[in-house]
Image 1 (cartoon, rainbow, N blue to C red):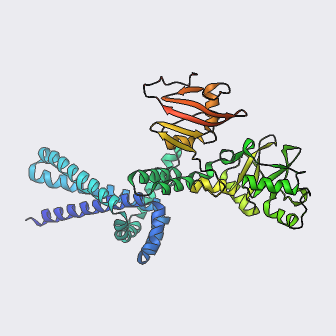
Image 2 (tube, rainbow, N blue to C red):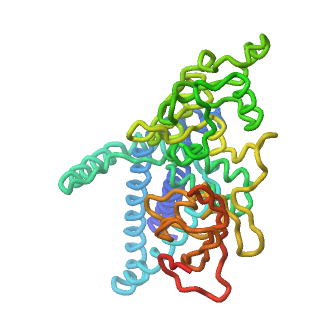
Image 3 (cartoon, rainbow, N blue to C red):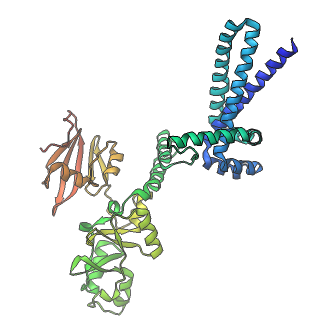
Length: 429
């Protein structure tokens, strides 16, 4: 074989190998992201410095792989064109060179290495870091010039092209958790807990608090004997204390603080001297902020106030924790599920249940503006306060007021249509 021909073929193969490498390295870096690269520092201590460099220079490493890939692809195509035209003539050789090189580059230097990297990104990263750092030194002048030119072009069009963020976003986590749950990689309870952690800082206290109408509170002139009876009846260990009306909360009474007057027989004493200072928080505060505030204050119960300073409800640490771990039942809690499937397509739902929670359980999007609960949804659809047994229609669902008490909707039955109702905003029966 002609030495020049053999040398050209060898150089062509070398460029194709480099193209394979650059494509694999680029995909491995992108697929791994900064979080994985940081984790690899501890997993692979023998390459700790390499992974640390890569995690700190993701943009630079990607630029090196992209520039290097384009250089070797262009060089390989040029050599192939020279080889084919020299053997087959200019016209025929050029056509064959384009077809052959396109096939080789697309299949063997793009699709194949990228699929390998996606499936084995840790392996590819581990073995490619030394070469990436080597080419970082060799190609740095070219990469620097290209990056400056790109930034200049981006500046002309008002685009920010100098950052690369490969950290996992909230949306990425939610998708990963949901897909993992559907595939069985994690249990349903685990999926709900992780989802609760992700959404914790986005939830308002008003969505998880005990509303004003459900609060158990006592007047400041209540006697120790009566307060003890209220604690026994309710099963609570702490109750708010108010003066004349519920909008004037003056403190919080702890059941353990009544042990001393009970022990000395002071049953007719008022509870006011034994109350503790209350913690007030706005109803718009996020649950994570409320949790930190209550934990720092070492207080387990907080009074939630509305924008006018009135009492909107109360929230406990247990309420906040339940957003992550789910319902925490104790010996005093009623064992009534928030959403009970009575039979297929028929659900008995408590009025206080959050619409998002019900939508997730039932598998249908109940979406309303300025309405958070099932009771609020029924009121919005009905237009006025429903009587027990009255119902409305929403999409393929019949929504019926089951239990109404003192202008409060306590229970709702939601039934999927069997013969098909017309979807709409709701229609009274």
